[in-house]
Length: 177
Ligand SMILES: [Zn+2]
Image 1 (tube, helix red, strand yellow):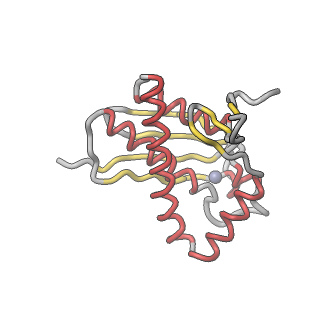
Image 2 (tube, rainbow, N blue to C red):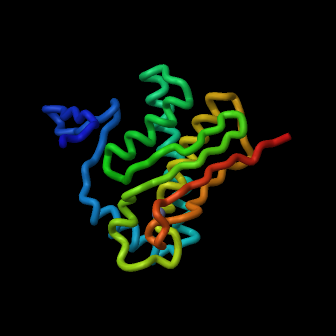
């Protein structure tokens, strides 16, 4: 089977693009080794907080760009974002629930790269990289609906690296009165 994403390569510069954005194709072990070393150096809490910010910023940018390119609804862009993450090899994401009124989502993930690269049974959920991604995608949904939440949180509430059948994320917003 060939990749589902289209890759355009600029002949002059060699830059790869998918969905109109420059991309980098890297080995999975590179991503995971870097991830583990940063976690060790910064400590999980500081690294997780940093990833929430950087992941959210990048996901929001991606969703906004696709929305401008495609003119799609926030629900469709959210779904496309997860589809593209899946098609680009991070794991197989599924939306179990996306409630646009409650601004909440439940997402499952199978074959996460962090589960596939984990050694033995993990003591804590390993796929927290994706929490920031989902926060950013929800930020985009909120922005499209003209809502400015106090906070958006995402937690991996179960992880296949700890023995669960699949990884599961819950996203929710704290709204102002
Ligand atoms: Zn996981």
